[in-house]
Image (tube, rainbow, N blue to C red):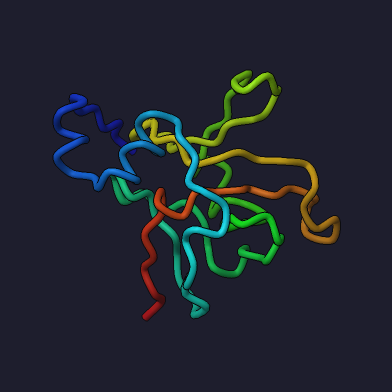
Length: 131
């Protein structure tokens, strides 16, 4: 997969304010502020570059206020890095194609599905229903 690099001005022109703040400036949308996620089969993609990230089959209701997934569509679909912001140590999740900040992964997901919770900002995702 080819890497996508754009200037800050190009990202600002392509993304709405919330998506830009989250994906390019490592922001976080307010919990429970992105309602109405689709329930049908399909794939969630990066809002910045369209790379496939998560499958609907791996989405679950965690009660945390952000879309949660047990795994990405493939091990290569997301990259992780250490995040020491806000006086915490967390694992950041970002898109390997365009470096968009997506959210964080935590070890408190469903044990029967691997034990991970990918807590992803809704504004960082688009949805493509399965045909």
